[in-house]
Image (cartoon, rainbow, N blue to C red):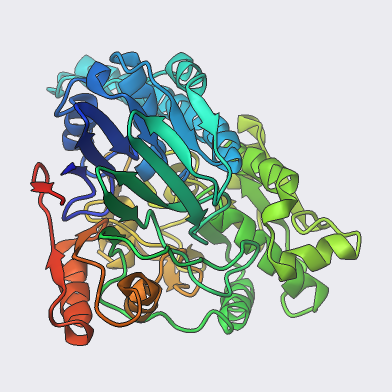
Length: 471
């Protein structure tokens, strides 16, 4: 078995790992690389292999940095199946269509701005169009095939995989691929115990090699428990100033977690009864999918159902699809809270909310997830004096607050505990680990931590294009 890393190698986004076995080729994930617009477009639109040479794709979960380039690979000639969980298929139907729609709208917006600038004699760079269209996303959806967890599935001659609950988001999986007598584990994104809504992650059985995410490999999270107290403090503090709370959020998973926590705080009368909005068509659609897959809920979310209560619906929360209703929020006075996508502030309605809020010191921008290098979200977290929104510099005068407890990624200690069962008890069966989905600082720290516990274990940090022969 030959393994080549083409994405999420020494960076966080663009998950894509290439397997060759028995004369055939397979992919684990096919995500988009996120970062500077031009670089991201070039990398996402140009595959380092021929798309029609791939026989099957196994998708770990629906987040765009893992699934978001599936429409591109299908458009460029891939014709095989995409295997994943049923919940992931439902989420991808909404998420890929939304991603395409936002790309089309952002390209349209930027082209209008370029035209205005050209009309007054300002030179403009060549336009960058959408990576793919809504129609491309619909065509990709036809290739999905549902596979149940813990059920081995043959994906080609002499190769099969088995999926396990990763506890990262609804329907997320870690997988074990078996071929040529080799067992290769792929963590996907490993979640955390105690997160709202979804069940805790389960470990994989012993494997020969492991592809392991390292997003938070250099840090230890605060306990999940105090997150409600932190959220309540931020909401109350901003309300006392008469400001608004703007929450960039991943539309799938994080948005639903925040809504459930806000629901609990309202029921407990621990925050003011201010208007609250989920302003994201994708988050609205995703919430409906969460309501559909109640079989994946943990005990806490299940209790709402036992009591006959919708976890994601309460009097003060309003879901917004219509763009005119979204624009109307900019004219709303008094304290309110709006949750909007995207989570890294790289597109969508959140950009408009930030543009209308970020220069007012009464307001708060609440960051609740990881922000990759070169994203607007990272610039806000770093509290840069000016940040670019739609290409225009904006003064960052709003309070920047962070809640890291909701991270869907395991931290350093949690990752080390997660791999413990893979070592097979006494003498390690595990021959090597490949660290991916992390920047070099994070993966280097995780490598050192792993080897401090298991000094004889081989740990690699593959760069894009690096190949390894697995025996």
